[in-house]
Length: 314
Ligand code: ZN
Image (cartoon, rainbow, N blue to C red; front, top):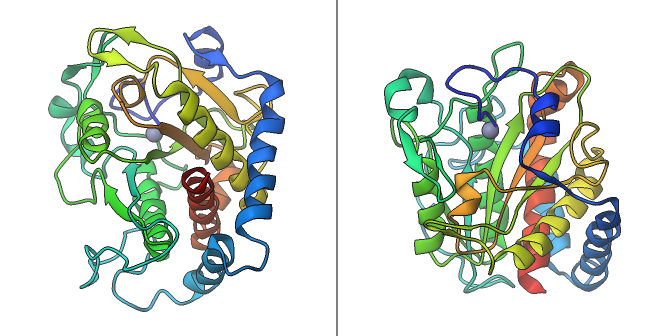
């Protein structure tokens, strides 16, 4: 994620400390783990439930990216599959709508004027979008987010969900953060997850899930989504830990993997349950080694997707 401007963001632990975010309490960890345990008990105990099927497909996908529509190892994304827009006929998530928001856009670098244009996020005005960060070797966050989104789309469609992406590398830049929120709202999404990887300092590691704080200002009113978004976020965090083995961030969220913020337009303007996830820190070499691995990205996609499945199945 980059909120600092069009360039790669600088190391940001200081931003987290001084910013308007509310640090999640350590007491929330049991909530995340509880979500995982409930899910593991209800949905994945050998009953052919979502977890089993997701695991099966996940184990095959990283090594067999052969068909059209399959994620590619280099993260450039798949070519559209002939059936890409067809909803699954059945599955536990039949009738559910999931919107995946791949953070940034690979083309944002070429459109600084457009993405720097301020948009209204309720509390204030903020740039339309940002370029995002990248690893030291030049693997961009925008490529990462799109690749994970494609993998999630495959997994969630297998569960019967109707899945929509806010962008699929099919537009020159953006969309702006207000439009990203609007896409989820207009789809009447049952859950929205915005995919990111962070650009913090070397040595800062791990993932964190960002939850909407309670905001009522201008066009923003998150009061109705704070509680369900927390539930969604705790379940995503719990499953992300379980599937990837990654630890919660060592620089944000006090070890809970959960951070609440009131300064993100994509959350402020959402009227449906929504969270962001920073899957790791692209500027740390150890995290970068994970983020650039197709096999790891498959685990990340599976963990996030299982959290969504758990939330939607209740
Ligand atoms: Zn980002």
